[in-house]
Length: 341
Image 1 (cartoon, rainbow, N blue to C red):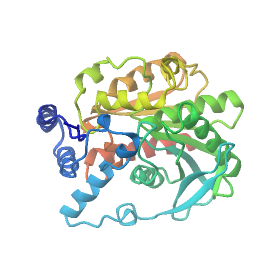
Image 2 (tube, rainbow, N blue to C red):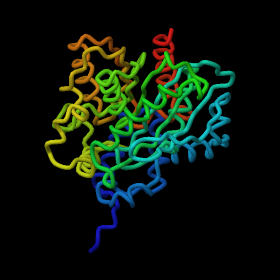
Image 3 (cartoon, rainbow, N blue to C red):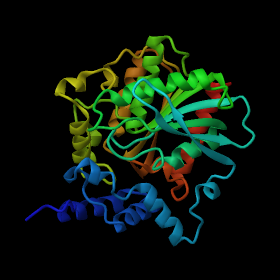
């Protein structure tokens, strides 16, 4: 019989029961809303099929509708506008959103990279995280749609990330920003890109960002046997099998796993600006954040890491319905504003 991509019912039930015990009430409600959208198991799908699955952003909208609330981004994060732009690169134009807080003039500028394992999702799916950062940091946020695997394997996304950062650095004033006050940010795969881009900016002589925000970043792919990978092997919405699937679509060979752009914890991290790491307890990537924090500290980089309990991977953009997501966005904004002074 053909596998339709449905989650294994036994594993799915265990995951739901464990999640109900460990998750905060609002995070659990969001997880139930996502389950109600009947997502298939990403690791059983083609990349094209995986990109069509319901997202946590879709689940947030479901919860908001159930609560009788407005789902429009402008009502959830008032005072921030969004514009589409194209960023020219050597490999073609990249779509990006520019978020501007009301009244922003000569503002701070944050280049932001979305998550999705370098394979799925896009800047639209991660609108809430980027929009929330614009509000909380009182900064212009440029959220970039970089090329994705498997159509564009490693290191295409990393090439796009540094190219887009270089372009923003050169055109910040045209966007209404201050070219001397730049930062990098990203979630999950995008958190990796943010740190790797700071390294690339240092090595290529581009103006250094003032800060790097890495929200549950992928810091290495060489070992999927860390404490949090074991503890959250069947967690939702991200599990170990999904990460293995993402990596298999991304890399050209196992040698890529040792490339310092992907293996951040063994990269030369010296001379980077202050870094903020945000992690969630119910996330296979939680230990990656701890390993990265240690590597940054050993390299002499100022770093602060905060772990939010009772929430899962992808919680950061769910500030409209998850209390700790709103707290995490406020914390990220505070850290970014402090670096821009």
